[in-house]
Image 1 (cartoon, helix red, strand yellow):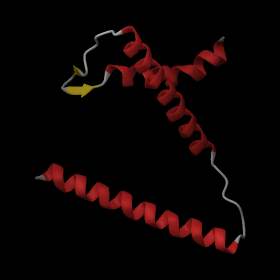
Image 2 (cartoon, helix red, strand yellow):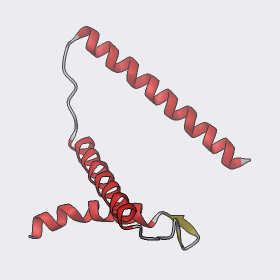
Image 3 (tube, helix red, strand yellow):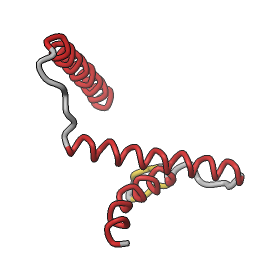
Length: 102
């Protein structure tokens, strides 16, 4: 029961956040006082998610093309996760370090 309550509260919070953001952006665009700029944090998160997503899709296509059988989920410390998604996120996290040192 608590899980469902948490999901409902989280979903409601997301919807309220989106609604408030839409109102804010509409108000600023109608007044046209200033343009919205991205913060360094938002740009970094966008790049991280984009890189991880690209790596994930590339791995999925390669595994599908080569017809390799991999487990759908792995369990580590009672937490289940997708091994391909974990690899994609880890490679996206390591990528800036690799660029800096090479």
